[in-house]
Length: 194
Image 1 (cartoon, rainbow, N blue to C red):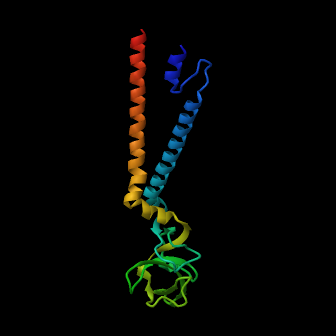
Image 2: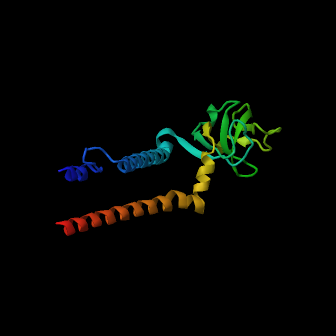
Image 3: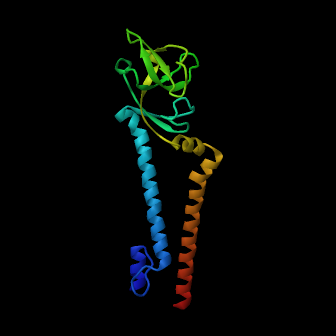
C-alpha cells in the first residue's frame, strides 16, 4: 500500500510515510527548476507583448557616453514618444543623423519651432555634432537594468547557447534516462522476486 501511494504522489516514501533525503532534494530541485522556467516564460511574454501593449522597446547600451546614468552593457527600456512632448533634460533614443547609429542621449536644447533637437551624452564634454530632426526620435528612455544587455549579448554566443539550451536539454534527457532505467530495474526485481 505504501509503495502504491508513493508512486501515485510522485515522491518516494519511507515505511514511515516521510520523504527520504534524496527525495527532498529532488523535489526541491524540481520546484526550483519550475520557478526558473516560470520566470523565463513570464519574461518572454513581457518582451513579446510590451511593445504592443505598453509602447515599450528594449535596447542594449553599446557605449559609455551616458555613464553613470546609463551603464555600458545595460538593457535600456524605452517608450514611444511624440517629439512634440520632448523637453530639455529628457533622455531620448534616436538615429544619429551623422552616423546613422541608434543613440541614447540627453536633450540639451530644442529649436523654437520644436523641429530640431540638440543632444549630448552625459559623459561627453560637447554637444552632438548634427542637430537632430524630430523625425529621428524613436522614444524616451525610462530606465535601465545594469548588465542584462551584456548577458543577452553573451547568450547569442556559442557558450551562451550551450549554457541556455544544450546543457539543460542534456540534463533533462539524462534525468529521464535515469528514471526509465530505475523503473525498468524495479520491474525486473519485481518479476524476479514474484
